[in-house]
Figure 1 (cartoon, rainbow, N blue to C red):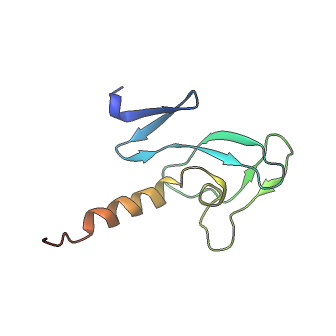
Figure 2: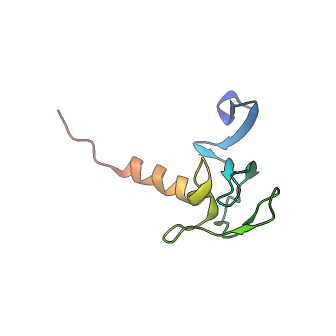
Amino acid sequence: MQPDMEEKYEGITTFKIGEITLKSTITCPHCGHQATETMPTDSCQYFWECPSCGEVSKPKQGDCCVFRSYGDHQCPPIQQEKIVAKKMLPICPS
């Protein structure tokens, strides 16, 4: 694997596709338990069941998925939108 395809934090390897991170540490809004999960690359994840308390979480109002609401990295579709938007910004001459 190429060096730019992964990053390490807190002992966890996070695989990346280009500039998109595929793992996110999600925090349960009910009990505070944290778990590192692999995010789907082609859709948003609407439900997440906490492995500690068993509660099923859904996104906060206005968010597309649980990773956007409770994760330390947003879902790949949102990451991709931000990358595209950043690349389309006009560069103003100084």
